[in-house]
Length: 175
Image (cartoon, rainbow, N blue to C red; front, side, top):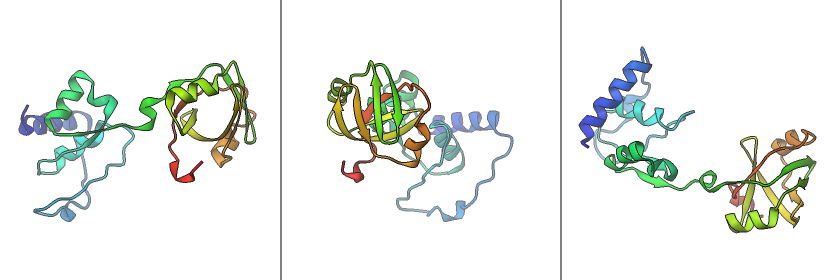
């Protein structure tokens, strides 16, 4: 699939969904040489559509590895020479049971923290209500200690919560 075809497809999609688009800072794009555009998106597909539609240069993107393997999106991404990026949330698994959080203590009800952590691999986090919560210490299958943050405080006393286990997002905490 040619870049020209993809560019026209993106422009068509853009014109269907958006009446008017104001591009700010287009003059900052260099005429030659490399540059990086960082999209601030709520949807991973809108950024490339908007950028391809409005930047008159052949571009390449990073894309979630999980999207790269999908039939239509993957084919388009491959033709754009996109680079697949494996994100921590792509390897998450649904946790067994439910959680009750009190401060930095987590009590699992029917949980299997040790087995689930081993499936994901060394250094993992809990995903609760789309928030990454860093695990400090696994005590046993039904008890662990988390790194207390404002986000984890907001989850305390919320009743029993569903969760996912995933690779640690906050590796710089070194815990």
